[in-house]
Image (cartoon, rainbow, N blue to C red; front, side, top):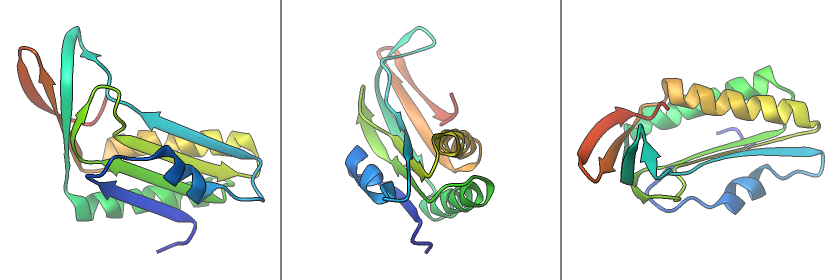
Length: 141
C-alpha cells in the first residue's frame, strides 16, 4: 500500500480528524476536504435513514485506483478516501475525502475528482428508508 494513501471502508463511524490527520503534511499549503452527510430529504420524500452496503474487496481496490490516479494527475502529496457502510441516520457521515497539496487549486481539483469518480465506479449501494417505504439505489446523487 502506498504510504501517501489512506483507504477505509468501515462500519464504524467516520471521523473527520482521521482523514485530516493522515493528509496533514508540513510541505502542504492546502488541505481540501469533502464530507458527505445523510440529508433529510430526497425528491420531496422525508429520509429516515440510509443503509450502505459494498462489495468491500472491489470497493477498496477501486478506491485505491482513484487515489493513485489523483496522485498521478494532480500535484498532491496525500489523499484519504473513507466510506462508511451500514445504517446511517440523518446528518451522519457516509464519505470523507481529504487531499493535501502544496497549493490549494490541486487539492480542490483532486478532491472533486475523487468524489465524482467514487460515485461513478466504486461498488457501494444505498437503501433509502422513507416514511412511506424504502428503495435500493446506487450511491449516485
